[in-house]
Length: 209
Image (cartoon, rainbow, N blue to C red; front, side):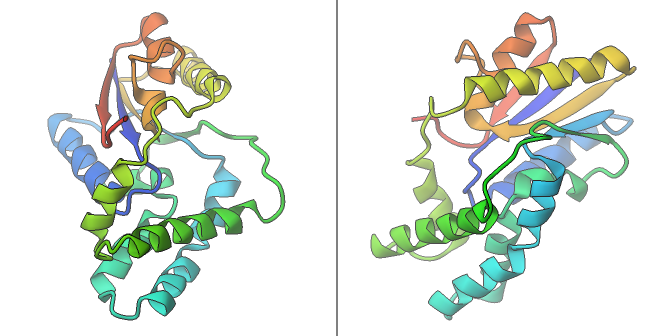
């Protein structure tokens, strides 16, 4: 029984494609789908953010009309991608909403979307080509390795452990920020699960500078 952990950069416009390729490769290696997929989201907050995707696309197109439709697809689908990328490869596994119950102030979802847009404007100001792959490479240099909530990492680990204590399982997947997935950090989710005896295999999809 193994938990496969994807450690991601939430702002990566190519993150969805890279994680989906990895998940589909895991699907080919297993005769049955994972028992569960754990995602770093509250379910209601995820639905609110997913609803922002068309608006996010419109904002990008308004600022940079020259961006091709295919590239706009990448940008749009990357917003909150950690919440539903698994649907590219799997249907039916239980979903563990690791941040369930998290409360944000009014307007936080829209502010997050605007923050994403501001990040794109920042890279454009640095003369970066507005191609998803180029922006993806630019984003990685701004990943902050230790800028994660230890309290949330512990809660994530507890929710996964609570689930596996109550269910028979064969293998599972977790999709979280890269710092939570890094076992080099003593209080990360991955480290805590390992200390609890869970076999974890993490794949980091970004640099942790």
